[in-house]
Image 1 (cartoon, rainbow, N blue to C red):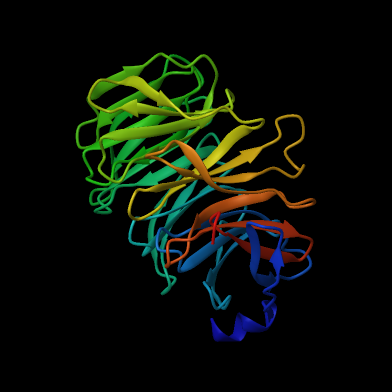
Image 2 (image 1 turned 90 degrees about the horizontal axis):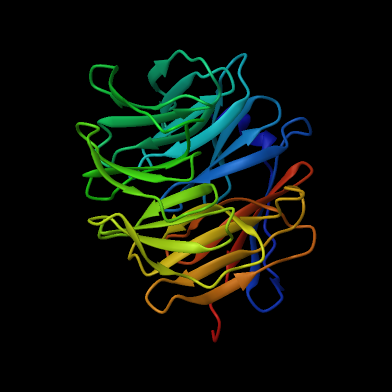
Length: 324
């Protein structure tokens, strides 16, 4: 994709903005390709952006070099998810189609025809399974070697809003629109546990590094910790002002990055918080005027990062830990 690099001139800007926020990179995109939201690979070496021109662009990080541009043809991109090793990128669209590409070769690995819009995607750590949640439909568990559905994972109504496989590959968590959290055996789809302790919708789920706990957050503006074995909420972090939209967990499992959003207007600025999961306290927090987070993850050095869009620019910010 060397011929495409002129689309993405990289501007290096490194001033400190406030106590905890630093602008790491600004990536310029074509005027018609404003980035709507992003996915950051677990190792922080790739950033995929769903753009308004219908394409998904993938940049290497921290260089900011454009490496690939994928197209869902007549579908608007609604979901992005990297595999645990960052080698695959799953993309879902508003007509229900799903495609998985290899990064950075650009080889198409899988294509599934659709139905209702894709709400969430997850790839198992060994890349053998794919979980797909479509609007108002039961989530599906796919065997990627046979490209067949293993089973459907029905919620009481309205489908699932967020999905995550445990790092050990044993479990699949579904945050369902009926406000329940369901944990399944990933190979069979057998129900392991159901959590009914939450009164409002959950928009984000993420397993702990040891696969024993599940972090959940959403409209109740809290981060709750569910014991996977028992299916009960065992801890709750201090409540915040905004709803939780997305999680990312550090490689060592010590930090949970939470992106928040303003439910009254999702375009308004909102904070990003790095939680110390042992102390249940805020390690770092950032909120900048005119900055609306649209994707989060971690750099190779373990520092939390998130993205935001400003016209034809994609900005990549890092959080500075307090006391440094």
